[in-house]
Image: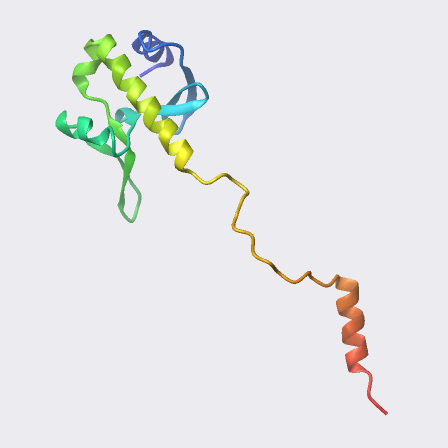
Length: 140
């Protein structure tokens, strides 16, 4: 799917940002990625709230193969083919996918804030060297 096709496809949803990603495009709104357009198809972000809708349509989660195994990405599900012909309903699914992406963003821990653990201050390298020299001197 090319960029122009995707822009037209999401016209009823509203403005989207489309960026090259992997072998296709990442689709975002309000700075949040909610869809992937790849060679394998169009995939929307999903979670425990929206996955049952995808399952009811017979959709499958995104998957890819490595040399060792097949990886299943349960957070992105294939958009049902019938929605390509119904832009109003596609817009509803896109809003649900954006909401799922927003919920996932809230669940993530903030970057850089790890549990604080009290650790004794480290000695500087110069102090370590001088401590080694002192330890090597013979006692008389």
